[in-house]
Length: 83
Image (tube, rainbow, N blue to C red; front, side):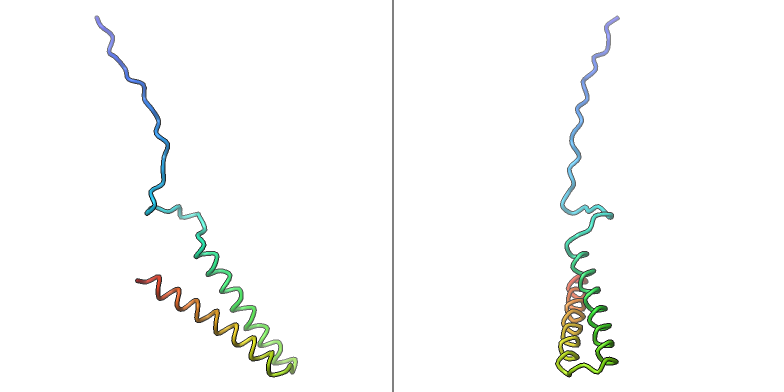
């Protein structure tokens, strides 16, 4: 009786499709968002600290400007991400 022929199986390397993402992988957007939140919190805390310390007005303005710019960037990134 003849033996059935078996074909060697080849393993194909798994390639990730560009539309699929690994849920555990950090993207540059995640890192940027985290850094922006850190700067927002740090500048708001610095603004509060200089308020109690009686610092010059320009220090308040710089801390406030940094807070507003980073918070605005977070809002813009969030709104663009919803499209």
